[in-house]
Length: 339
Image 1: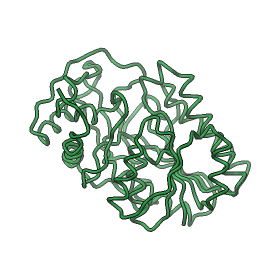
Image 2: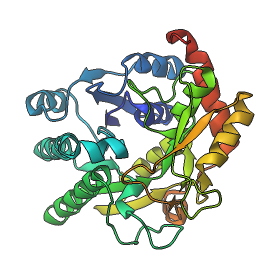
Image 3: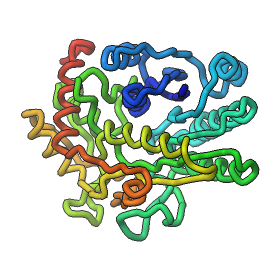
Image 4: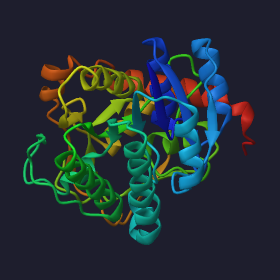
């Protein structure tokens, strides 16, 4: 079966490409490389022994996307492509709606025109907003608190409307929590083009000396140590979740399914810093700064539905996330200039 992976050169996309190839799927990647590097696909090929067809396009470029769908016969699409930083979305909301919502709209229109109606959508736990209780279940109210989350929620609603209008669509909405870690080979990991927005790559760059110190956004939340609590999930576990979702998607009657992909456990920012210090043997200097707009205090999943229906559960520990992240950073150091 042939699968189109949008944003496949990105962090989660590249790890999912590895797991798709291991599972026997043929993979085609499209990516505009706005926050990724084409070299990651060479490393995916090294890991898997398989080269991936790659087309550099922006999903909003309808003509180019039409050409891709005309050239290949896709059985399904896994849609990762999109901007993903909460703070940046608060500062630049129109950019997020244009890129994430418009790009998705064009993709779905082209899919419909070519009769490709199997879709795994990379959604986010941010669609739950600030939940009244945790852990979070899939049937909790949806109310995002920032433009990034709202862009994901808009796309989810768009897809539900599409499935209602055309019962041939089979759609999975994967609401995942905080991806971390890297492939155990050390060949692929999170490698943003600019200053990292996520905790793990920033911590890794501080540990390696590339960055001077980490900013911790707020220490006055109602949590164990005042810092934000999140559900950190190993990116390989997350990638495997996409493959298991695809298996169910391609064997199930049409409709829309939503699944949380998380560990079911929350860890604070300071706890993650301590775990990374232990894994790396390096001190992580940090400073407390003001809360970041759009952030919430606590967010972690109830992922029991995915375990029951997808036969999936997160298996890798926080220690392994930190160890794999540090291995990836250490093996990548020769690509950077450090102070």
